[in-house]
Image 1 (cartoon, one colour):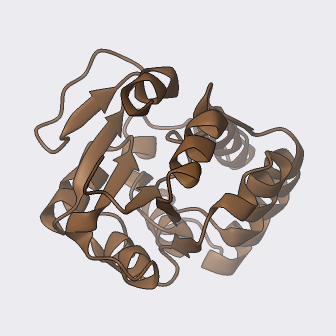
Image 2 (spheres, one colour):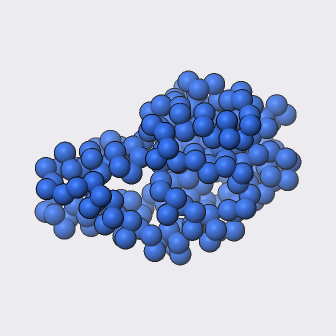
Length: 210
């Protein structure tokens, strides 16, 4: 970490223990319309921003609704959960505090909406640790490196000075293509050719930097 001056974090599945939320929302949302959740649906939308996900869902299921209709319903379903129930992954807060104490600038690069992730960051007591909050409503999706590049730029750092923490292979590939160091947060035994380091959790990462 000697040459690293910035750390950029994905949220859902990386810092937040939140993947269960969207699986449940997908189940309720599509079930209300008479559909089961297809096995490939969550993987298909994983790197998309909110609007792209809505447009994709409308097209895939032939819904007679607007993207705004879907986004409003999803927001209503998820806003309360994110504000009050979403927790950080084990030892994630301690890891963020340790990085911050070492003078490493912290940024967020997420596909989530600020209406969701900002209350969750505040509720978990880590909002003030971040210098930059970026989401893909301002850039292309995470199948491109744009959101990481924008976050690094706002941190006044080059990609080579930053490490990106992610849990999606496609996002790790994008970050790597943008010139970033990458850390994969995989809870299962997985490998990634686009990760410089693979960790099962933040307790492991804490030991590395202390």
